[in-house]
Length: 91
Image (cartoon, rainbow, N blue to C red; front, top):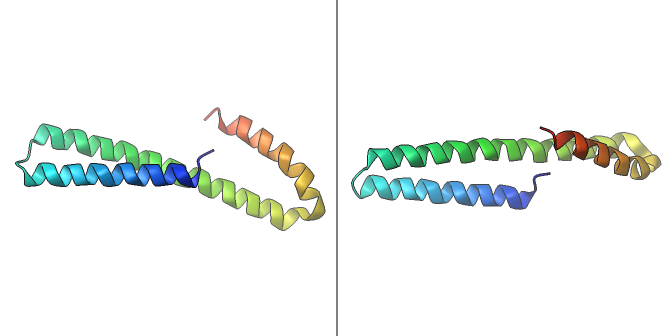
């Protein structure tokens, strides 16, 4: 499961790539390098979207469990987590 630390790392990587692109443009644009940087930014943005989605799904699922479970949610939460992590690791 993705974590907030993963999100921080992705945003740091994106920021570094954007800064690299700015420097490339300022220092005489090598369009081949700009294309490579843009591709990397695109890949990182896709990874960020997947990470945000995963974190959101996990949080919403947990909130749903807490809202509907009452006292039995603690016991069933462990088995739900185990089954959801085995099903999400295949994606």
